[in-house]
Image (cartoon, rainbow, N blue to C red; front, side, top):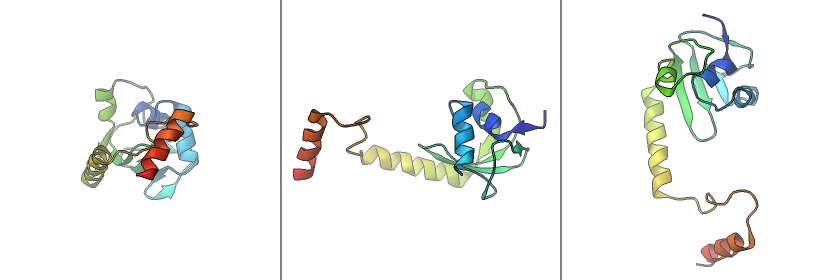
Length: 125
């Protein structure tokens, strides 16, 4: 197998939960091939260098294998190799998030009356 769409590969490599999320990310420019925006139907090849922003993390990977089947995480990990700079950046970002907790991170959607009061107390201090 040497001809797989980039959105299908991103889904199989477990960067995105669904193929439609992967396709949307490619369309909006959150996935770049050698710094260039691409289309979801673009075929991925072994050796391609991808910059992937899946919302929570940013990855820089080199494609090692091609697959259009979504398997387990250990199998998916064999499809790519992450660069050392990317690993260091993700680790630093993880540590930063652990040390500084965003005040609004616990609120989902529109804040309730109780949530607004808590935010008000936070700003008043």
